[in-house]
Length: 450
Image 1: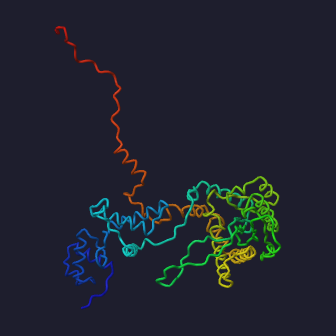
Image 2 (image 1 turned 60 degrees about the horizontal axis):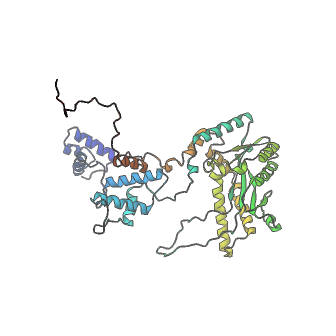
Image 3 (image 1 turned 180 degrees about the vertical axis):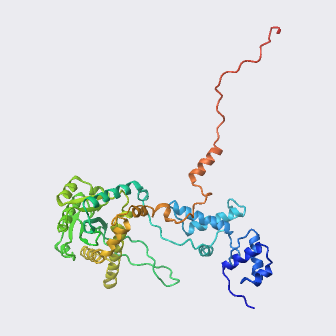
């Protein structure tokens, strides 16, 4: 008679009945688990091995315990902000295998066995909790934002929103970004066996800054373009395709205190139809903190609120939700131009057209993205829980759960301190107590009597 299929629940129940004293044959007759399978499971459960199913196929080069230790080390390195790649994992696994085989250090006569890329591929298959990712480079100060600045920001915004009765249309976020996206390597689909896969590079020979602002309702302020130089051609101004947009020049195309004050006046004219005051959230840059800028804010009814230092990538709506789609639009526009003209040289007029088109696509035509950005950052609706959750994104390298926190994992400083205490030992301290009372007498030239 063919046995019906069974699940882990049936297996656990059958093992429990056998453990209670029932005969295996009797359990097999009244259970979906076959008798031979039941014998094997009981034997496995009574030994050192786990009762779960074994991996089919030949044994792995490294024991399962060592592989699990390697997984813990990989996760711990990610928590420390130093994630490892394929080369590091293979080297560390080869060293572990050599030590497990009894060779602490490889020599010329006893070389260390180097694991292959095939082992690495199968290792990832055996541990689905690991995956290949592209690590984002973050400066040390950006990863050291504490909760104190977030609490101050929350209290400041809460007071303004309640006392001034600020609605979504009167909460703005302003930031600047470069026109050109980073020329990072992108994953593409290529013909298998290709010896070299490359792509043409298309970028301008100058830096241009784009200044934008959006409110919590999704409305976008026309952009301000900052180009290098102090003179503008008429064709540069004519290339601005967004109504109300502006352009100015700076020595190297970067924003400064003077341009920020000019932008505040430009912003004040664009929000003149709104009830005052309006809240403008900016980053903690030195160009945004100036006495002249404060006077301009008072004149136009602007309440300037600065974000905590080095936290723009966490709680600034433009950085979180809008500038990445904007850079993607710029990349797509450049690719379209390269495919149609096949000219890798990007002229100033072309960059202004592309900047305006990308700004329209990513910010003006998609107000929902701005709304989502304010909500994701916990600014509107104001939420201290969301603000703190944003801070936790980069803590521990983004690792979820308790993987990589094994008790045996030790930092290098702790090991050096422990080894130093054991090796670099000093002799005992000199005894500096009172002098002991003399217990002997000199007998030279005298008779000693009691």
